[in-house]
Amino acid sequence: VRPGRSVASLLEVLSAASGEGGLDLATFFKDKYVIVGASAAGLGDRGSVPQASDAALVLAHVAILDNLLNDRFTEPAPTWFNTALILIASIAMAWLALVSSATMSGICGLVLTFLLLGGGYFLFSGSHLQVAIAAPLVAGVCSSLGANLYRRFVVEADERLVRQVFGRFVAPDILEQLIADPTKMHLQGQRVE
Image 1 (cartoon, rainbow, N blue to C red):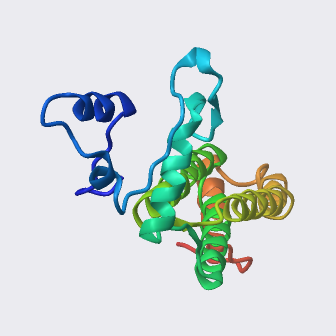
Image 2 (spheres, rainbow, N blue to C red; image 1 turned 180 degrees about the vertical axis):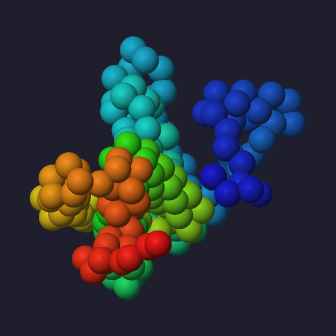
């Protein structure tokens, strides 16, 4: 309920009306919305709401009325924002999978997941904006999987070929330099005196 509005239980209202110099109920209820409901566990007006499995349903009705009166509704995020999230998540995960180890890209993927979830939560709670979280997460996982498969079957296959061809003829430290920077591979000979 918005500040400046009062919420009183029916018992408080009736006890204030029955005393000396009591409250005039007609003036008390004038221009007000009155919702009557039970909140005790044994009275049957309890049920499941998104925030709790057992809550007084009259409170859900009050929250809905408050949202209607204050024009507070959730809105979906703009399409460009969701598309940008999908592109950023997929590019970031593919890049991480290609330039870092599988462990590091997995850790960064978890960090990205928590950032998406946290950002979506804060946008929802602060701006009443619904952000599509599933699509960026799926795009990130798929692009990471694709980049890891590419790395496994293309990049590492080239590294295995270099190890296989030069491994018998070149010192291990030089072989690691060749694998780290393939541009150093010169097949021409060089005379040293």
